[in-house]
Length: 166
Image 1 (spheres, rainbow, N blue to C red):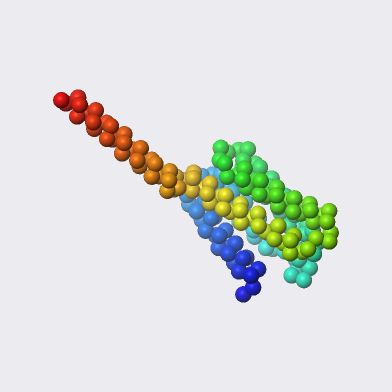
Image 2: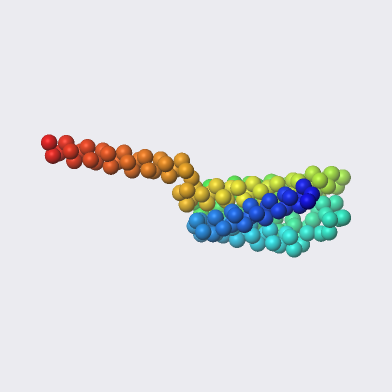
């Protein structure tokens, strides 16, 4: 297995895991974000050119999908109170700039275009996973803080009750 194949397999495993997490634990914005990531990934997989010509010039179908993804994250960011869509939008815009760079610098090394185009998708998945975890309240620090605060409230309430009895 080549490095590229391993990274692709890792991406799809990450996509499945994050999408399931968002679909099971997230709210509506997380579910829409998961659907956007799944749809874009499947469409990109369907339109990628053969390996011998891939990354040699701007891949217009992939550029169109990436522009749609940026638009989708913009809409999610505008319609929700979540922080993660803003991160994903930033990653999507950075990805679009990679395409713009390829438009303007035709002698760019194909590998640089490939790496620049792919890296942002991983970061968007991580942002969705972090956002889903945060919104679902499963971030360990948040849950621990909530438990400690609840115990302190109970302790204070029991102390007040004991003082009233005396």
